[in-house]
Length: 190
Image (cartoon, rainbow, N blue to C red):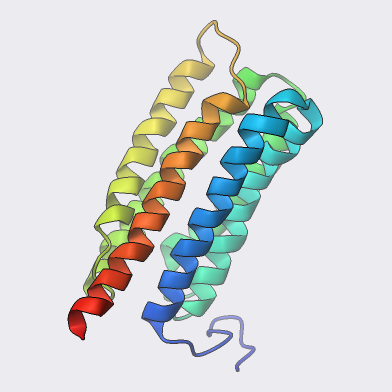
């Protein structure tokens, strides 16, 4: 185990870590969606906590993945995503004091940016890990969803957490498919 800021915390094989990471991200997102569509939709304080927690979790998850995938310097797209997601979590907390339109607008900008970063990370990982097509597709879809969130934020209807839940559900689906794709890739090697 090493403790340097730019080196991995543990020396787990990259494929093993990446599968664990994808399944962990899928699980968190599925739980988030369930919470958002039940208690988050009906209890405003819980909904606000969930809206801030989603990008905060993304920041933490990307940081952990960067550390365990060769170090923070070798993963610039993820480190940029760490800072962007952390800033967005704070921005959503502020936007919640303004309006849900503001929240959806901030979320949209973040979804578009995070999607481009995820796409870039998937393309980079394709060379070393393979089976990254779900992450590349997810990144492209996230970018498009972000643009649609920004448009919806400018519209007349009152957005809510239920408008963001499908985005998180698709993210969960893509992370799950990514983990399964790596399992299948490993199975084919046997």
